[in-house]
Length: 105
Image (tube, rainbow, N blue to C red):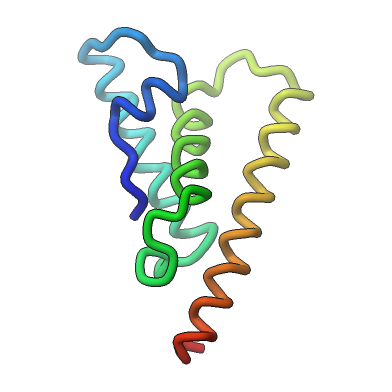
């Protein structure tokens, strides 16, 4: 799984303070984001694409999405969703290629 720290996620989202509520919500959002990445791209991403920066970006984006789903306009939400979909698709194709090269398909 890509390494994303709580500090990375806080910086990505724009959180500049920490308390028990922020920690609890952020921890839950990060766990959800990591599982969403595995479901969206494939569970063997760690084997074939370890620490791929696109995977890190997706975990951060998923964390932000899970943490901050408040008051986002439809246009902004759609643009973000398109960006996330593009990253997912790229990783799926790259993972498939790596698996084929390794004879895992």
